[in-house]
Image (cartoon, rainbow, N blue to C red; front, side, top):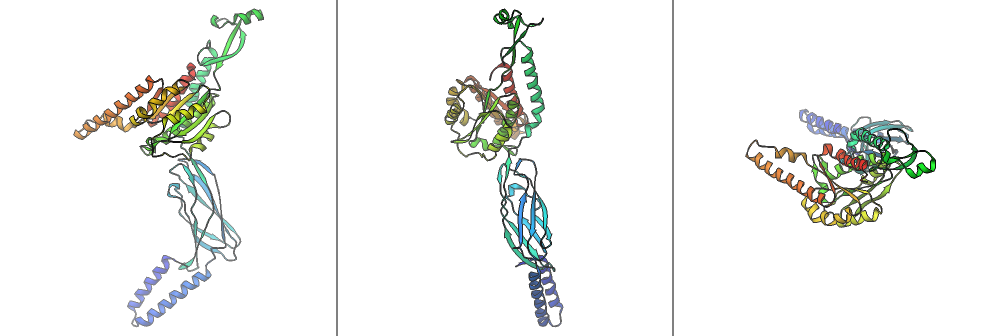
Length: 431
C-alpha cells in the first residue's frame, strides 16, 4: 500500500479537529476510524498494478547532444480503470524527462506516453525499472508495484564538426578538378589516353602510344583513390583530461568522424584503432557503406583508461593492421610523459612505412592565461602558461624531426585542421 501526501493532509486536519474538540478522546477515535476506513476503501477501489503491461519503442541509436524521443506504451489487461503515477527510472546521464507520468488507462485499453532522453555521455543506456502507483478515487492511498521493460539506446559520439563538411568537400572538389586538368604528377594516377589538343603540356605526350595510333596521344590523369587512412585513438589516461566540458577523447572522436567523412567522399578506405595498454577497437581500413556509422558505433563504448598508453604496442598493432602504405593519424596529447617516454622511441618504426600525423587538441585557456598581465597572480599564471605552450612546441618539433606531421589546434578548429592536413597530402600525393 502507498499513502499519498493528501492522506497526510487529512491526518493533519484531524489533529486540529481533535485539539479544537470539546471531547478530544471521542473525536480522536472518530477521526482515526474515518481515516483508516478511507485509506482501506481507496486501496480496495484502486486499479491493480499487476494488470499493467509496458512496452517501449523509439530509436535505438542517437548522437550525443541530440534528444531521443521514446514512447512508453501502457496496456491495462484488467477489468478496472487504472489511474496511476508512473516513474520511468533511467540513469542520471540519460537526462530522461519527464520523471513522473500521470496516466489513466481504462480497462482493456492502451495509452502512450512520450519520454525524451537528453544524454550527457556516450555509451549504452538502459532503463532501471518502472514504478507504478495506482491511486484510489479519493487520492489518499493506492497500490504500488514495479515493472521492467527492457530497452537499449546507444549514444554515439558527438559530431559537432559536421559544420566543416561543406568547406572540406569544396576543397576536395577543387583538388580533384585541378588534378584532372593539370599535367598529372603528385596526387594523381594514370587514367587513360586522349587526343592532343592545343594547350596540352608536351611532357604528357605518350610518344609510343602516338606511334601506334598514328595521332598524337596525351596521358590523362585522375585523382588518386583507394588510399588507406587509419585513425588511431590514444585512450590512455591523458585522453580523460577535459577541455571545457568535453574530454580530449571526445574531441579526437569528433575529428576522426570529420576525417572519415571527407576521406570516404574522396574514395579512400577508412580504418580505426583505439588502444591504451591493449587494443580496444580494431577496424581494418575498408571502403563502401557509411564509414561514419561504422566508426561511430565502434567508438560509442570506448572510455579512457587510467593508465599510460603503450605506444610500442600501438605501433605494432598499426603495422599488423596496415600491410600497405597508408596515412596514420594518431590522436594523442602533447605531454612529455606521452611523447618523450612513449611515442618518440616507437615512432621511427611507423614513419619508415607510413605517413604519420600526430594530432593533439590544445587548451585555449593556456593562450588566454599567457596573455594575462593584470596583477601579480596573472603574471605568474602567464609565466606558467607560456612555459606549457613552449613545451608543446618543443615536443611538436621533436615529432617533426622524427618524420611526423603535427596538428596542435584548439577545439574550435581541431577537426578542420586534421582534415586540412589530409587534403594537403591528398593534393600532393602524400598518401
